Length: 166
Image (cartoon, rainbow, N blue to C red; front, side, top):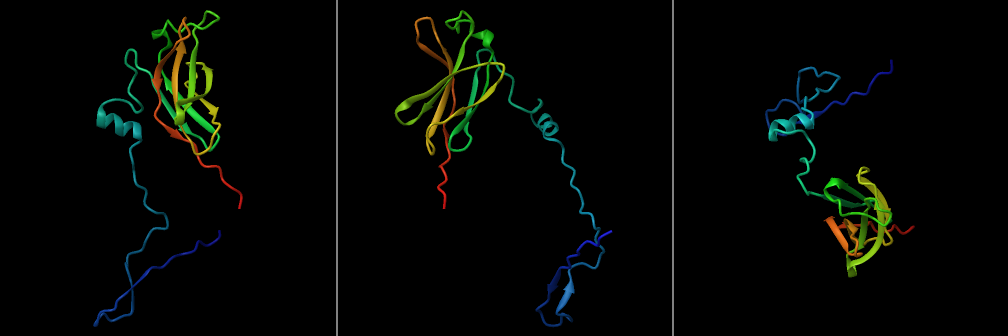
C-alpha cells in the first residue's frame, strides 16, 4: 500500500513568553478520513419546509409554463409544461392538434424560427442564428383564421459570445 502524504499545519507564536516559535495547532490525533456531514436529500427538505414534494407545483387549470435558456452561441434550449387537452382549438391543417414553438429575437421582435413540438416531449433544443443576442420564445398555435394564439411566453435568454481564436 502506497503511503499517503501528510500535511502538518503549524501556527507561529510571536508573543513574548510563548516558549516556542512553532507550536502545533492541536495535540489531538486526527483521523485520516475526514468527517462526513449528513444532509437530508433536497426532496425531504422541501417536503418538510413547504409540505409538498420537490419540483415545481402542479399545473393549475389553464396554466402553461415555458422556459428558454441559451446553450452556447448557436443554440437555445426550451422546456414547457402544459395540458394539450385544455386547448381543443389548436387544430392544425391536417385536422390534428398542432402546437408550435416560436423563437423571437428581442431586437426588432423578429421571429427567427417556428417549429412544431410534441407536447409530451416537454423540451427541445433549437438553433440560434446570432451569438450575443437576446431571445424569447412563445408557445402557441395558429387558429383557423391564421392568427397566432400564444399560450405562454418565456423570459429572455441571451446567447453566448462567439469565441475568437487567439
